[in-house]
Length: 408
Image (cartoon, rainbow, N blue to C red; front, side, top):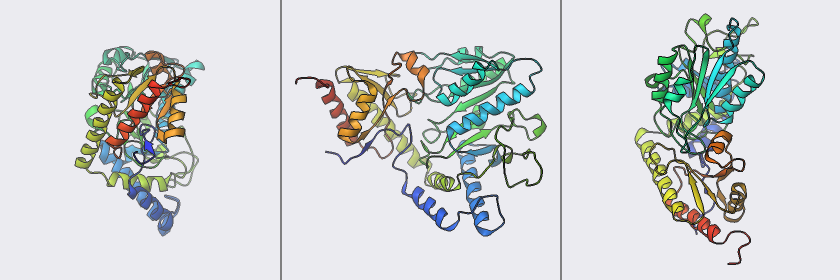
């Protein structure tokens, strides 16, 4: 019997975190926890230095042209909201009677779906939703074709958090540029940064939303938004991103207006400095070779999951049939047992953590026919072992052969 717990919910948040994360957070709280940017004393300066090191580390990770274009946030949802509200509000302020238009897809997380839908329901913008196919792929041509001369924002998740399907964002962005060079493209990289290289300059991304607590293995409550020169030029009077959140920044104390230069223009209030200390430690603990081995390990475990589940009766697997073009995520259902019930039983009886439900991605589940109950998502991590996967498969096989109410 493998040692419990078996954690297969890394797509929600990675666990366990590298030991350096907790050590860095404790050290920060014990020795450096002033308010960054809000004082000239030593503790405030040391806290600010930690925050700026985290910003620079993130900038290097995604090949941002400079650290100031990395706006620190409280997570990927916060980043997405900052981008969408900022672009839509900016467009509405300069609309000149033309209603702004946005494009999204059915693979999007609720952070995108609900935020854009709120504007659309109030009649403030028009939204076009592009469907994915049953395996979670969005056609780059269809995505770009939805762009018009009124389209201010096009949103595309780099990978589906439910199915794991990785999108061809390179082709999608190139086609959007050809259709309307003024349209800003927001890429939700919650499921990819930390798992695979993401180069914002090579991909020509305008806005990139990053989660610190998933593939990067940092603490929850950390994230970032990359903002390109197209979205927020150095000539700030031409900014396409309106400052939706306002408050103290520390950089410009007098006056009632927010600073106009990044990152302060889009950062207000005290940041999660202790979380960023942990995120910095997680990033600094990485090296390209180790990260490659860890990702290969996760994908090998994903293949083991797919093969094992395929051999179990009454199992339906969703998404791509192989590990190519997918993150380490497997979505499935067991006939006769609702997804949330199966996930709860695995937790209570076997100390196995998976995610049952719609995974904040309702339109994906409508597409694959699993709405409204959803499905079970298993997502291994770098510390998951083959023995743990095999034990999980044995438990699922037992449930398939002896479902609740079966007489044996």
